Image 1: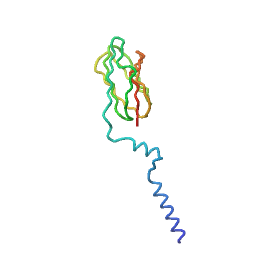
Image 2: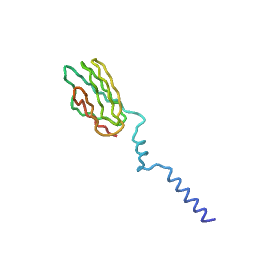
Image 3: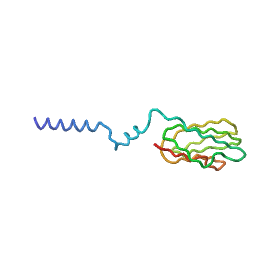
Image 4: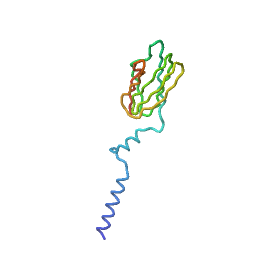
Length: 128
């Protein structure tokens, strides 16, 4: 009877310790790093006029899941490519006041390029 009681106590201890999350558990780290209160959005104003693009080759910092908004005024049609995982593409029309919003879910460097103009608008530095 004593051995059976000890076995039950050991099994119960194993179950209890297995139910918690560990800092080594990737799911625990992911859920702990995602904030319920998302930060304010990052806004990048882009102007395409007379074949020139402003800004070009800048660096912009943002966080994973932070809303990023591209506000575009353009006199020519183009495509904005966001080289995130998954990649995202936005059709730019020749008009003012266009607004494109997206988020990035994987930390790292993400280029935002204008396809037809062949220009990198900015490189997003995405942090946890």
